[in-house]
Image: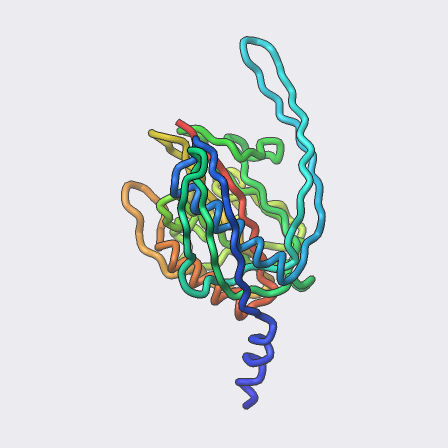
Length: 279
């Protein structure tokens, strides 16, 4: 009874939620990308319906140079952030695919287990850097041959892991490093880390993996999952990758591992960073 009670108490914090979304895809988007977008928005709709939203606004300036001329564009984006987080799917998503006025229309319905976002998760900093190890090199746009680095900082001691999810989808373990037999990457509070750069390594340099992104065909849309917890956790069970690729596992295995970790640890936080790799 002593062992069972904490499990029962934690189970009450998760709820089954369901949502659906109708997505009108642009002509330039593939069917698989459109289905993925519809699925993610159906999840957000389910979370918003159950837990509510917080209104947010972000501003950004994009600088471009072409034919010796500099052009700047200012964007102001307002939106909402849901006050819940998706833990795992329940069953398979259902899709209805139709065409209206030569436009691809995808209706997605999905159910899953979710929980309200609590203040117990740690707010850490994670940024993806392109071809440089300083924060000014933050970018979500990469080209074939670009080097990628991860900037990380946390207000408390803990453990961090990072995975790249490609369009296949396959999960590649970027951190902890392949030569690290512990399967854990410890970080100290307040210290800035730049991973994947030997010159910035706080551990032995021969442990550090370096990553160069490649793209030979159409642009690829990938996701970087950065996972942090003050409590120890080990990376998912994975397999050696071929052709100099990182260790990998299927997307289903990755999501099951992450869901199990988050069920046991309500202080674990996850940030998903979207990047695009072009030829």
